[in-house]
Image (cartoon, rainbow, N blue to C red):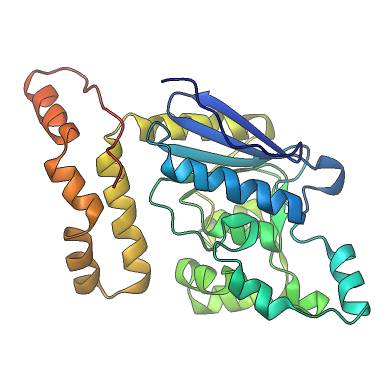
Length: 278
């Protein structure tokens, strides 16, 4: 892989490459429990937009520095705005096209893995809900406590949790604002894939990323497109749209399908190439 140059960003976001074709973003405000700031939001948006267009990067891991993944919005600053009469939340939510942390509503065809140390609240949990695979520490806790503060989980968390957990479980978590353990998130609410000791959260996320990178990136991104379409369409519509998607055309007309089939017939591991830009 050639040397990659991510866009400029502040010290609130750490950018690293823990494995070939893998990008890792670390929220870096540990003293503030990685609560989101306008600067961190901008950093995430710029780096994620770059990641989308960088063909040599196939998978992304998002994690947090310190003892918690992300505590959500900075309620101190939000309180100052509200008390001063500044109320532009509806306009902000609609104009923020990719949602909280530029992740909670982003429709990304490259796989995204959340490595959750300690837990996530509010917008942090909304980010987690829009990831494809979630690795969490055994002591992690999750919450969408917005109703306890007089606000709403408006950045995509409500429909995503309903899709994942079903109406009744989503209502339990959203309407009470309760904190759920990692075990509950895994066994009852079904948005955590893997539970590991705290020291293993990032290493396990990297292992998962490597297992994805072992596969054809063309096929992985086509499959992710089909998953995204299934969120918004009935099965038949999702099937048709997926079959004729740009990602599907790239699979069947690209080099990696030839390499994958050739490698199988020759009984050797395939040597994948980075996908062509769509």
